[in-house]
Image (cartoon, rainbow, N blue to C red):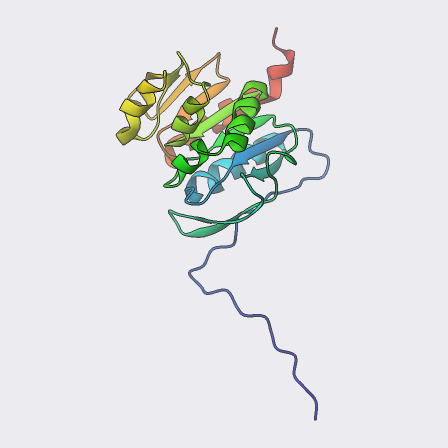
Length: 202
């Protein structure tokens, strides 16, 4: 009797593919994305894909601990391939928001990585409550910024100059904040241009 090989279980039609780090042959730049349990998947998926494509960059997902995380809006698995000790240098930093943003503030290692990555990056994009994360490590102090409309008071308390707009830009275009994923899309090209030519600016 011949045994039939069992096929792997099929993904349910409504389940989206996991979001992972993406390597790219010959990539000169690296887009680093902070991820955590409860991160908003829509704030990673299209904005980061467009940014990486525009720069022909590789994408790395960094979390406090490497592994799988449950993302929301829409529900999806996000796979962090790096932790603060293994993450490569980041050229463009993306800080998405999400329900779990407060857990990042409570983790010293990931806070220090975020602080350092934000200081060294050529360009930064923070989306929604991701602006609060960036502000919590002192990187929006005195800068014009926006974010989730319900978090404007908290953002101001962390030292940012809050703008009630869809996007805000500071530091000669190096730091861009957006109120949500859709608001971030129109600024991708400008941010990518800033990152591409940052090394040539005085």
